[in-house]
Image 1 (cartoon, one colour):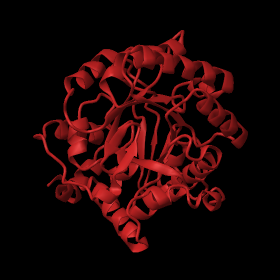
Image 2 (tube, helix red, strand yellow):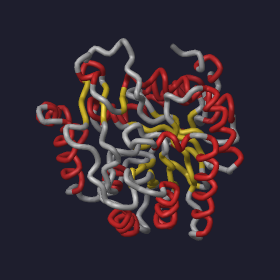
Image 3 (cartoon, rainbow, N blue to C red):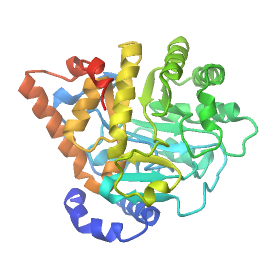
Length: 358
């Protein structure tokens, strides 16, 4: 029903500023009655982090910052949902306007600045969904004005670990000053050690994932993957939004807005980095591919580059929730065409060539 209504709703939503449209979408989703998704083809199932994902298509962080509609999104057929980002203390983020649609580019620029209701509100909502089906994780960050950002990540980990399947450590948002400095080797090593210790001390065993920026240099990627391996991180999310502005952008006026660029123009850079990451870690650390996925073809390419799981967000702005089913059907068709029973043989098989994607 929702999928069928999107073509009618899209002109109305796109007639509003992007943040208002998003807020209205969340409000509508929160009013939906509980809905069980249709069963997925068994070929799409992924065994990872001690769990069975019914399909690899997940919702990326940023869509549901307050953990208000995770179950509604699972009902739309997502294989998993990542809520957040969340920071310990409520913060408003950057002034509006702070999100912009680049319609001709099928892209979005945002500079939200980790606006968040804070840890208490999100923890209460995640705790309240205990026992419900579906895999839900949370993206964690640090307050902009924090005097101890490492402690912020520890606080989020300790509080949220009992209520989620995974925690994504976000050190790659371009919209919080100084946050990407935590990607440096020494800082990152300390941060991941503290997060893993806090996770273990909680008595829960959610997976700990690390989300990285698409703008990182290859020597930085070497250091980051080495640190992740040493600290026993469960997965890498590749990648966040980019501060780069490809010369191919058609919306030249909006392209001058500061913030992170996501959507179709991010596909090449994020897929290249995904492949480079796979070449470094192989099967030792599972990878989640994010950035520019807007079709079954782009999803298939991410898997060929090394992704075990996928995440989408910006493409929903343009394609609507029906995109989830379109991707899943397309993946099944490709598996059948190649006579494969599941996605495992496809993961990373073309990483070497896709690392040279341009």
